[in-house]
Length: 96
Image (cartoon, rainbow, N blue to C red; front, side):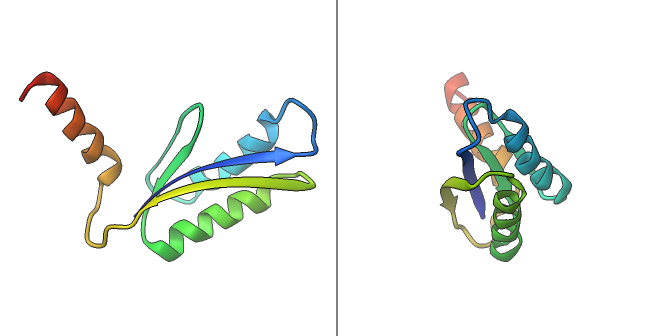
């Protein structure tokens, strides 16, 4: 499955980069394929392992309150969807 999620620390002031970095560190240390951009972190793996990473990322944020936005693509048997989905769109853009 692919999960794109965003964690927003609440109650810590305007700058939240340090708290978000701790959440991203959990994802990167998980060993699962992942990508972080300006809005979301995407992680790929089996249901239990991905959801465990999301839970631990939320727990790593030092804030009195945490907002979580999550979008999942649950497609059993598919691997490397994080790169193949983008490659398909790029192929269509090239007109292949």
